[in-house]
Amino acid sequence: MPIEPFNGAKLALLCDDQVLVYQRDDKPDIPWPGLWDLPGGGREDGETPEACVLRELEEEFGLVLEESRLTWGRCYPPRLPGYLPSWLFAGELYPADIAAIRFGDEGQHWRLMSLADFLAHPQGVPHLQTRLRDYLAERELF
Image 1 (tube, helix red, strand yellow):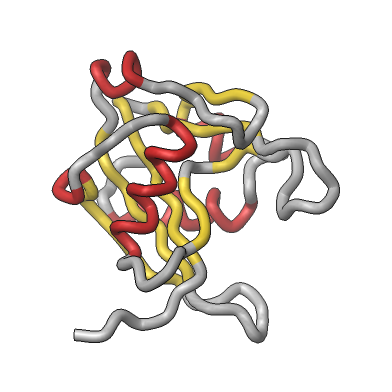
Image 2 (cartoon, rainbow, N blue to C red):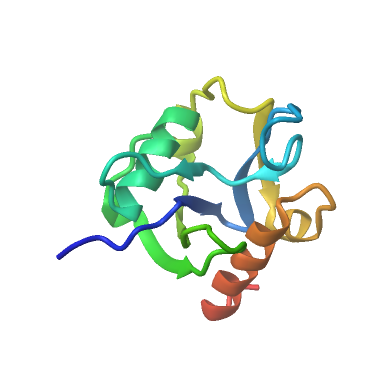
């Protein structure tokens, strides 16, 4: 079955009431400079959305997770004309995963942030805050 074109994928990894986030580099030539973001990024070659987000997680955080760790996913329509759809996935983060994080060279630093803080943070990537709310509402987690 052919894979529908998409721009990229992001991942909300939750540990209890916290989510794994990182602060983007503060460079004026990138989208959302300096804001708090979720792991993930752009599609390469003919990747599936799941392969894309897991590759990005490995590149950014040094974590290698099986696709079965993705417990939810949704394709969102393009935010702007001329763009492709993008995905948000969710999964569970375990203490052993946190101990294994080896932060890469994208972004300033990472942290576990409470869901409430991320969702209300004035420096959170706005559309990801909205999408994470979708997930939490659907799962009745927040």
